Length: 260
Image (tube, rainbow, N blue to C red; front, side):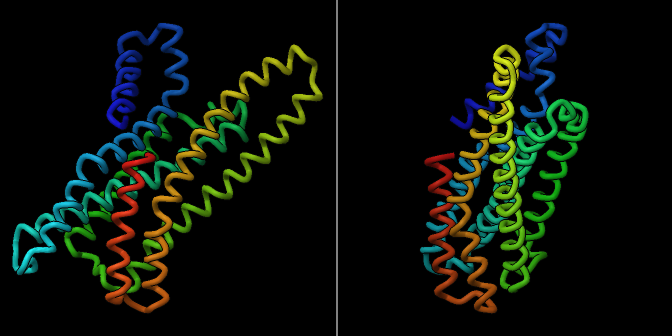
């Protein structure tokens, strides 16, 4: 499913490049910035399934062996896992947040949306998402950031909670705007209302689809966020919390495999 999403998006991109004057492709080009955000999410989601999950299984299996701490392959695989899981997980996290903001602006700004949310700005935002995720993942994977400190868990918890709050607030505003639009449409003439309703229904459908993705991410990352908060409250990671973190990471990857 993840690979199919990437191939479909890539097909639209090639079609745009080969036939830029086609009317259908012009419509695709108009909304290509949405495809860029979806492509960022699809690529990160695909890499979680193809790279992160096999590495996680390998780390768990090698950790059960004797003298795992003295095994260089184990340390290399563990570092590769920490780098990739932070890279693709936070890239997915930030991409969903960006998609939520994009849907809010599409509903809230109306005709100004195409003027304010340009392709260049969207591409710049996607590049920033991946650069920040890559920088953070390298710092963690290369042990340049001590992962046993409370500050590390507090930072991770703050990032995830901030994204959850932003997405929740934006979806509340989206719901409010959609309700107001529905009331406005009822006050218009039938012909004009039909045209406006068709355009707004497309935006609402896109917002609802993004909302389902948000719910999936909320279910996935909530256990992990709770573990971060438990470490902060406990003023450090304990043996029980670290054991629970293993179950939380397994649950996160399992849910992502099933519903995302």
